[in-house]
Amino acid sequence: MYKKRLIEQAVIKASKTFPVIMLTGSRQAGKTTLFRTLEPNRRFITLDDLQLRRYAKEDPKGFINEFKPPVFIDEFQYAPDILPYIKIAVDEKRTKTQSADGYFWLSGSQNFKMMEHVQESLAGRVAILQLLGFCRPEIDDSRMEFEKPPYFLAPIESRFETSRNVNDIFEFIVRGDKPEIWTKPEIDRNVFYSSYIQTYLERDVRSQIGIRDIGLFEKFMRMLAARSADLLNLSALASDVGVTQPTVAQWLNVLERSYQIFILKPYYRGHAKRCVKTPKAYFLDTGLLSYFLNINDVKTAVSHHFNGKLFETWVVSETIKSLWHRGLDANLFFWRTRDGDEIDLLYEGTELLPSEIKLANSPSIGVISAAKKIKGINVGAKRIICTTEKNASLASDTTLISAWNLF
Image (cartoon, rainbow, N blue to C red; front, top):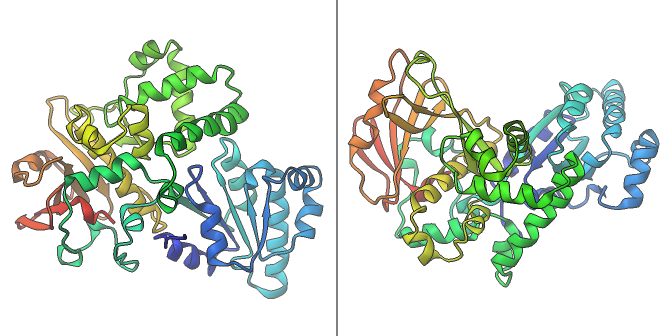
């Protein structure tokens, strides 16, 4: 059963102005299903087919000439040499008709060298969109207001109330965001993530960067999971895993570029001497994070000593989805001083929008008092994201945001 995706509007809009739409994202996020549902009659080619992959690699020009657009090429990263010929096809179409909008749709899990080829071959011709797993409203079949901006850019009255409680939130957190888990309820969540990890390690990690000891890389992922939402201490992580610090840095890049984690950078503009400059790492799928932490049910999650980190990781992931799935950049940061003042999440736009994340029903306004200490920056309305049942105003510039309204 297909569930409507928030990113659909961004795909449709981009297809009216760009000849090539490239959809990347984590493995099994629903990229192929999305494209095939939006245009079921568009020609579909998948390079998971080994014969077609060989054809595309050995004769990229012939491949593109045979499979005429409008066409959807899935797993395109397996044959990067087709990209220059896509450029030629687009330019020829533009010369003849002055429009090649939506000519090629490409999808694939991020290839660690692929972006260089894309930027070189398709500069000015490609719209790159990023798809993660389901955001909460997609799972819950809730009302999704496609035309509205993300929650931190929208007025408080634009969001609805909920009677859900914290246990319901942790149901989403523990089960994770992969579409197959939610569209096929009979799937065993533990079996799914065990298989997912092995597929990811074999197809994305080993094949792309040649890691020999896959077990060591999996150990690294588990060690990193225990540090989700924490400052990244590369030296300590390397010591715990038993590898060098440069290796840890390389492996973090692998996880980031394959959409398993998001590296949240510190914001220190105007405060360089006072602020922490170490980034944080957040898992993008809290189901995978919970699996690595051996948290397999809601009851365990709610009472677990890591529950606050789970909630914070989920909020950050939902916030990223609220941006990426609208075709927007995730201009997100955190702020921490060496004196201990901290703001969990900052969005940088025309002004700096601070948000504090608290696993609580009614946090006080004091939890975001650190925002007053950001000097010399245009700081806008403040938000406290929590488990309250409805959005509420705490002060003229501070709002409680229900975790159910993060889209």
